[in-house]
Image 1 (cartoon, one colour):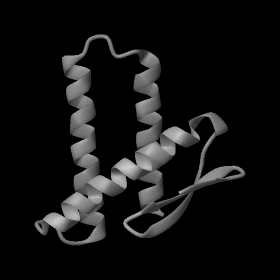
Image 2: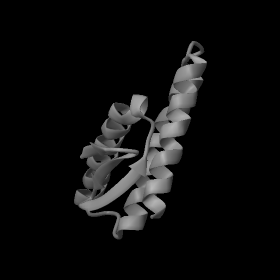
Image 3: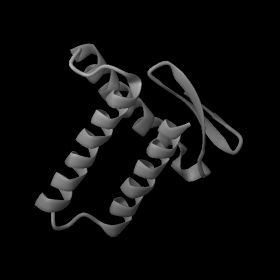
Length: 98
């Protein structure tokens, strides 16, 4: 995964994607992409879910559930962190639709 002017080139399950990203958020996006790739590979290697789209949906569902649990159990999640998580979630969803 590498940064290029105006965006970041990431790889998820062997698919290369160019994602637009502000300079200050590149490292966070790369880390999110690596985490998503890892989660999707875990699900895929488990053998219970077949097909890239289904693997992506299960990974997204698992990550969304974790975010919801953090929101529920933590009353002190800073608004900035919450908005950054939401922005990263939208970027991941957009990348998966390409």
